[in-house]
Amino acid sequence: MCEAVPSRPRRILVTGTSGSGKSTLAAALAARTGLPYVELDALRHGPGWVPRPEFAAEGASLAARDAWVTEWQYSALRPLLLERAELLVWLDLPRRLVFGRLVARTLRRRLRRTVLWNGNVEPPLWTVFTDSGHLWRWAWRSHPRTARLVGEAQASGACPPVVRLRNRREVDAWLATVG
Picture (cartoon, rainbow, N blue to C red):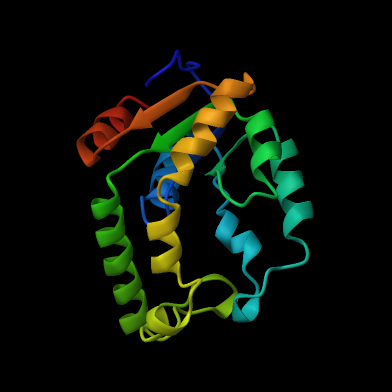
């Protein structure tokens, strides 16, 4: 689905399952449009992966700004961001593709000990077997949820235009039209 898109949206949300490329696409959109990009994971995760107490307030402040590109995630912020968004870009990629990307990204980050937000690094790989909330498990279970959330937003009438992208070729072609 690709609804009438504002010619120059000032507030853009990117949604999709973990590993679908939300942050990568959001950063690319910001670079092409000149809009500021705010990565929600950087606001959310404090040291030791503990949620930062300022997260909700900072998210509300972000939503109130005149211009931004960010991800549509975290239930505490979804309504605020959606209410202000002028465009929602949905990365509706196949589960097998997303999961493959997520596994590769996690392995790369873990093996390189990539420092993420506030000093965090990916947990040891064996935790996929011991942590029921491990990102791989969560992403696999939650993949269909994005479609439900987008559908609910559209049904409510409170949804901005939606650009639904189903594969890498569509993502690249659509991104080439932005700017």
